[in-house]
Length: 247
Ligand code: ADP
Ligand code: MG
Image (cartoon, rainbow, N blue to C red; front, side, top):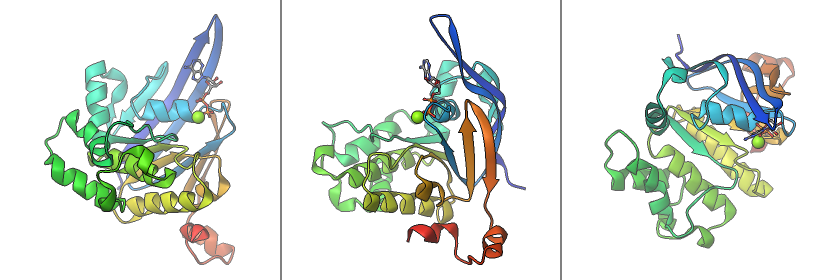
């Protein structure tokens, strides 16, 4: 049986803005198994980023339970939480969040400095660069790279610590359609070839179509949770994988 990477039980996140309570997450129950690739979709303000930040241990829920690879993340101290983030989670951002004064290789190496596991850093960075097809750009700074290449660096930085879970919040939100296809293709490969669990937020239907499961949020609640498997597709006389839509 597959191990759950993420298990959320009745998760709430309430923001209090000047006495007004906003339920950014309003009772989320969600299980994500190892090796799944899931898209989180929903209108702006529906809670997608809040969900990703809680799952990514960047933020804490107000109430409810979060089990990360079976560990009760809610009980963790701040130190243990950041330790867990370094050990289990890679995060990819819409605007890449690369440090402009550092080279691609240096940006990728940065999280290894805080990773509790021991790595041969040079080798790990070289492997991550190769994995995203940027071995020949190791010494370029972000402003010497295209948007798609910068996001590849962002993905390499997320991968370099060998996380159990790759989270991406609108990873193609700043990219043109060609770079979007490349980045989604790379995320699909990391899922299908490297066996990574991938959860990504998107509002682009062609991006969510690249996954096998689409979770739709509305007002901090799960509106629908659709698993698309081969049988459904053959039922519609579509023998190709959903991934092929982008190729
Ligand atoms: P999405 O990513 O789907 O656009 P968010 O998770 O960013 O949605 O936001 C969900 C809701 O929570 C929105 O109503 C937003 O205004 C509110 N919210 C998000 N972050 C904060 C915050 N730091 N303080 C107060 N309200 C917030
Ligand atoms: Mg958002």
